[in-house]
Length: 460
Image (cartoon, rainbow, N blue to C red; front, side, top):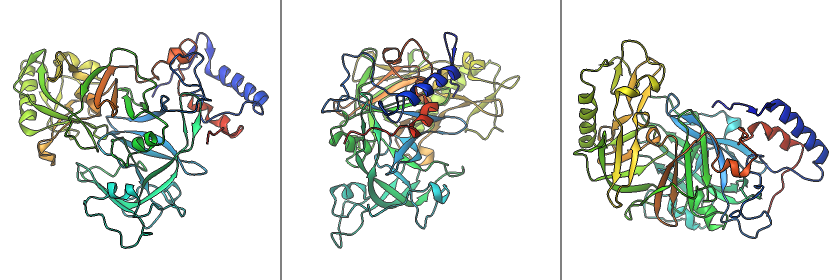
């Protein structure tokens, strides 16, 4: 991500030198917390003070890395353990269990040994209530009370992870300035399987954002640390942010649709919805949609997919685009008279789409060309809608990252609703409220070096 460093003539280097001087002078008096990114606001009527006895209306915010293309995932770096160690995890709103690759005889592990998680007498026992939540079968039986809790999780793309459930400290800084060290249960995976022709992901594991009892979200909520809300903002330019809790939601502009009451706790579903093409209704109706940050692209069932391909293809007739069947990036690609360098070169050829959710009048998710197209390294433009039935999703429809770009997407489990609003995902929401003027380094990653000089302050 391109973090430009300028603030009314003051360079970032100058500001860092000043901050370093402040730290050296005042470190014994004011110990730093983990990050300067989420320090207590200067003034906010809705924020809790750091001395408050409850953190439930505060939030924990994380910087994301990644993109739809060419990486194909968005990741968060999460501190786990005591002392804390960073693990890069693929964020996935389509599953609930968080797991990291395990320092044990391991199949399918992609990280070197020193980047694997090593259990230390912290296995979750089989009789723990959470253990029943991480089994594929409903027949939960323990041969002995002190048996370890084995987990298994399978994904829609036929990938899977098998391992043992552990619990450890996950230090988190909240927007009210406090730092907590909740103990969270998660998986230590020693047998990973990946599907598809691409190489296994380089990440250390998966951060499950679903609402099941085993999810990190539910565990943080049950400990009174946050409201049962999670959201993400994925930047089309790469990166973005993730948050637990509802402290950063804008006061207006969010479009809300109810979650489907019959949807699984492991993912978030909404609908029915119908597709609009260039502002006009189509034959694609009655879609139930899963919002899945773990999917790079958007999938429709075969019937809907074929209808969409026909709409787009017929509209391109007579335009200066030809099918690029030699491009292996995605199933349907087009080439122009010369190579395309960015989406701005091609968006004029394509019409906007929209998903209209019929439970509420005039409730639409707009899908401009940027929300369903990529430009590949071969200089072609490809359709980011895929046939879900063809890859084993049967009749499921999945809204993936490509269609969620530059939107703050919120999963509110307390009110059972999903919301979204257009946003600048390159910076935190309400940044002007919390920081002077338009200081661009909201996340202040470069200030992490200062934490070695002042120990973090924890609220027990």
